[in-house]
Image 1 (cartoon, rainbow, N blue to C red):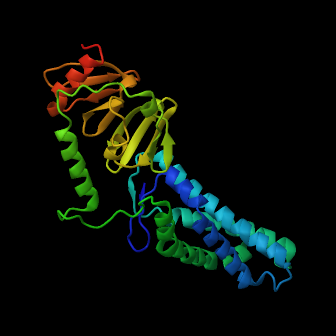
Image 2 (spheres, rainbow, N blue to C red; image 1 turned 135 degrees about the vertical axis):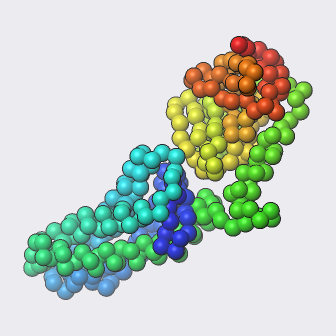
Image 3 (cartoon, helix red, strand yellow; image 1 turned 60 degrees about the vertical axis):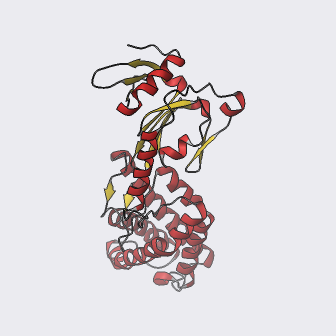
Length: 309
C-alpha cells in the first residue's frame, strides 16, 4: 500500500514491513519520547489537578499505545479491503482523527477518576481539537524524521524515488532492466539439473522474511511487489523477481515469463497452443509462457518429464 504524508512523500508498506517498523528500536524510543513529553508538559493539567505522577505516566503510555493500535488496525483493515496496495492519498487523515477521537474518550474518562474533572461531552469537546492538532504534529515528526531513520536501519526501501541514468524513475528503470534480463534468459539448450541437497536446503530471504526453498511454489511480480505462494499460503512482499531468482540454485524452478517464477515441484503439465503455451500448476494456476521462451520451456519440460497437452 502506498501512502502520502503531508509533504507528498510516498512511503510504501506491506503488512510485514509495518510489523518490522513497529518493533524497531528507533520507533519504540520515539513512542517513549512522546509519553515523556506529554507527561513533562502536563498536557491538559492533569497532574496540577491532583493526578499522581505514576498514574499520569501510565495514562499517556496507554494513550500512545491505544492510538498506535487503532491507527495500525485501520491501515491493516485497508490491506484486507484493498489487497495489492492501491495508492491512497487521503487515508492518513482517517486513521489519525479516528484514533485520536477514541483515545481522547479513554483519556478523559480515566483522568476524571483521578481528578475533580468531570467526564462529560463538554470536557471531551474542549480537549478533542487540541488532541487532534497534537496528534498531527507527532505524526508529522514520525513521517519526516523518525520513519526515514527506521527505514535506513531496517534497509526496507520504503521511500523509493529519484531518477536513474536513463532519466526514468528508478522503479521504471529497474523494471525495464528486469524485463530485458528476463527476455534474454539463459541459453535454450541449457538443461538445468535438479538442485543438490545442500542447495535445496539453502533458505531464500526476501524483505526480511526467510523461506525454505522446498516450501516455495511460485512467485508473481506485481510492480515492485512479489506475490509469494508457499505450501502454507500466499503473501505479498516488497521485492523484485530478479532478487528471488538470484538466490535460486540451478534446476530449482523455471521463469516462463518475465513476471513469473515457478518451482519445479509445482509444475503439473504444459499446454501447447498456437496462441501461446501455458504452464499448468498443481494448484490449478495457469502461468503464461512468453513467446521468446517457448522453445526453452518446452525443452525443460521434456527434461523434467512434464506431461504435455
